[in-house]
Image (tube, rainbow over all chains, first blue to last red; front, side, top):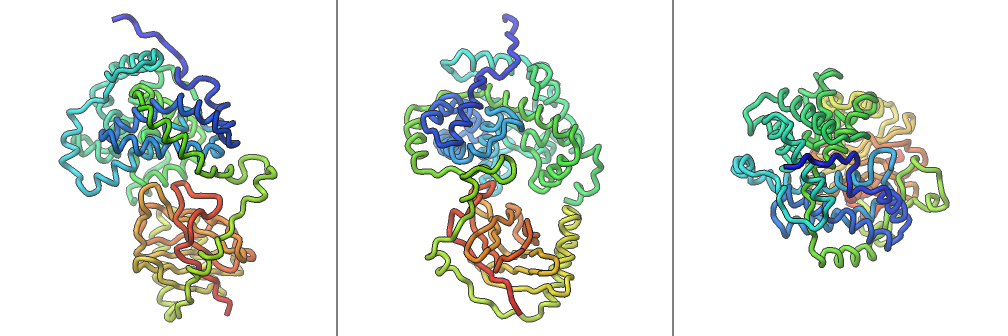
Length: 194
Length: 257
């Protein structure tokens, strides 16, 4: 395989997403349509990776996108990128949903989680998304097995670190540390700066 | 929760990864967020790790169906936007009109009759005990709570809320603060949160959110009582609102005697 292209910025989070959000914050619906086009794929993909169920995922993605419209005036560029703001919102909503469901059905579901891996292989039209995916996949391979499993279960499956520890039968402190040093390694590999 | 209390700053620092991945249970997340306020290095690391998590999100991007775009773009034409939250931006003409008013019908419909309240001392002990437990998580706040409860002019007013739960407000004019105690309250539905308000004679001023996970809770209302005549509680979208967006579950007027 060819060496992955190193891109230092998240490609879909182009420089103008933040400017668009500023316009959205002032009620500009045309600007919102552009924001939608930039973030909808990532939002839906992330929500689906956490929730799995396609219909429920679409419903949550819709809620998230409307919330982006509604709360755009709260976005502060000083606290992070526009894409970070949107995807953090999407991640929290998806994880909240999965946790409220899991509170009742709990454990069996979790046993099955270990078998699953994120859907890195889904077809997408966008070259940028493919590059992003390639790069993340490459960097994921630089993690230890425990780091990779911990980060994957927490982020893509919405488990708390306590649940990850229980599922992998590893002490709590170890999981906390793996989540942190795993992410740090990803950060350095992906060239993320804040 | 008690495991969190005993954590030192160094231990808390290792939670940056779990926090950035939204992998902390609610109570620990609250504790960590308080720590973040005092730890600039942690805050920087959290921002970087959160941006890193965003890259993980971008990597699973999917192709959305066309109908979703139509639905969302249609829906936003009916959804009112929030005003920027207070204090972060310079005040604009818009922010002046920000304070909310209850719709009149809602006010009339949900005015709660004053429940006679005996045994305040006993009850206040209970509240103080609750407050003491809370103190492990939010010591400063609880000290303030305790001061309100111990104030010579503290007055309580209790009222039944929907679903058999009970809400009580304690107000101290000398401390200029108020405490709200809810017991047996159902957690708000998904994506919602309970929000408290000071009732400035019909104009609602936000007084903070009630911890989502809690079913029995002692909350120090944000901000001074000043001229408020009572408090209200509403269900709001997660994160709260700058003004009430729904009819109040309850309005409690402060006892005057």
